[in-house]
Image (cartoon, rainbow, N blue to C red; front, side, top):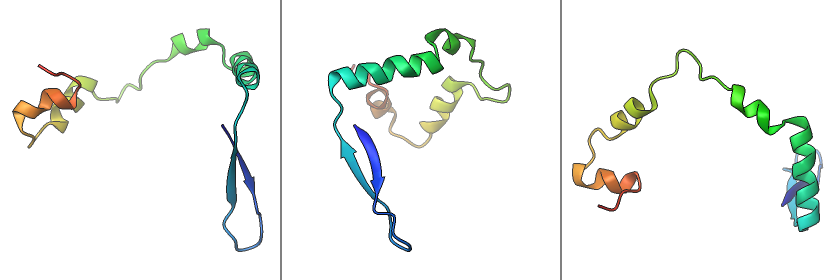
Length: 78
């Protein structure tokens, strides 16, 4: 879907309409985006040096939760 903003009247909120793209249009859009940001450019990403450890963040978010329900939160159905 493509959002098209219309109805730009002074003081009025914009109206957002959605247009459905065909498979061919979606494919062309994806190829154009890959020209701008090739897949190989994603491999060079480095996390910020001050970023916390993701596992520590997840464990801290479990504080105060019922321990027997925590596996369900993360997709485990043991």
